[in-house]
Amino acid sequence: MTLIKGAVPYGEGDPVDILVEDGQISDIGNLKSDDQDVIDARGLIALPGFVDLHTHLREPGREDTETIETGSAAAALGGYTAVFAMANTDPIADNPVVVEHVWRRGREVALVDVHPIGAVTVGLKGERLAELGAMARSNANVRIFSDDGMCVADPLIMRRALEYSRGLDVLIAQHAEEPRLTVGAQAHEGETAARLGLAGWPAAAEESIVARDCLLAGHVGARLHVCHVSTAGTADVLRWAKARGTQVSAEVTPHHLLLDDDRLNTYDPVNKVNPPLRAISDTKSLREALAEGVIDCVATDHAPHAPQDKDCEWSAARPGMLGLQTALSVVIQTMVQGGLLDWRGVARVMSERPAEIAGLPDHGRPIAVGEPANLVLVDPKATWTVNGAELASLASNTPYEGMELPGVIKATLLRGKVTARDGKAAR
Ligand code: DOR
Ligand code: ZN
Image 1: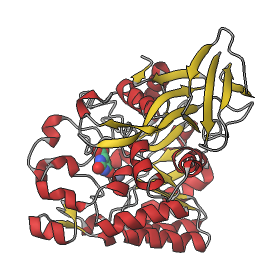
Image 2: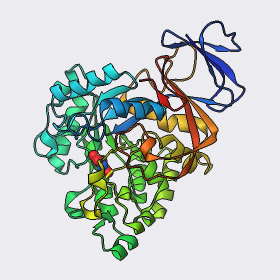
Image 3: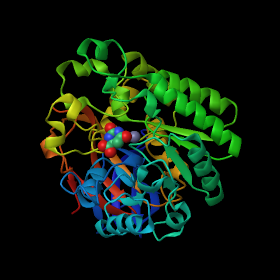
Image 4: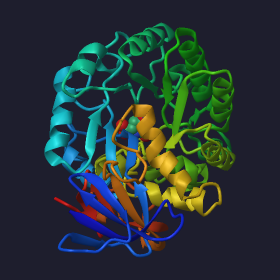
């Protein structure tokens, strides 16, 4: 039993005490503490535990950069109670053996619910569909499929994938990047890239695939999820598709909400990411689209990389940045402090919508008696300074190094078990 004393659910109204018993919220009110474990939550906001639809845990294959254990610790410290692990591991998660390994290891570590994402195509090659049904029926119970890192570029393969996904009641998540338009691309196609002499990644490479996939999803009556939306134009396409009834959902990363291609002037590859940091006008449009609900949720695209893959010249560096432990703070800075979202809105974009999109019945639930005790306690007034070396990830490629960010996570509970408290994961 754990008693959370004096937290304010959703940042609304008076503080309450929340009693957690047998993995559930068993009482809410003004409660007496007996001999339970008490969490002093005065001044803290209680939110439903966060759900990340897009995490790279790197196991199997690159355990030098992250493991399911270290990534789960980073997730718990970031307030997450469920994460979806991308399929671009080595070997690739395109079969039941690999997805079951990830699922089983996640259960052993038990800091966060780890749901493996299966590959859409064999080897992420975009040529032949992977065995979606076998992965969906495996013990891992795969609900989301994605070739993330690569785009399912062939429209016929994408159409088939959407058709199968409808039959299996699973979700295809697309990394939208028309590969013919991004050959050799190193940075957002715009003034900064031109000045720095970096080959451009045009917005149209993303927008054209999103438009195509919305049409395909509408045509076959399937659901579609768009990974890491990065341009104002993609938000416009989504607005149009949703207005005409397409079943499409979309995520934006914290880094695309906060950072723009102005960061590239230092040539520091910590800022290299795919899709690339865009123009400041895109950043602004993405924030508005998230507030409006055109973009449904925030997903981290947490992408750990080894020093030798980041501390090198720009063109040789791998794309990607850490995100799990900084996501909430970046959302507070860009959306809450910017007046675009209140704490209810934070719960919606970090927990409720992603849980709905993934079909997780036990996450993103209301903070109410009888509900699963998947909770995060946030100090909204405190700030912290990011130090990559201190993050729980094995890698330290954070673009926020040295930045003072708002919002400190004081505790995370997964089915009533404290998985992180005062900056320490329960390992
Ligand atoms: O920046 C990225 N990193 N984008 C992706 O699509 C893949 C990811 C990775 O795996 O490192
Ligand atoms: Zn991607």
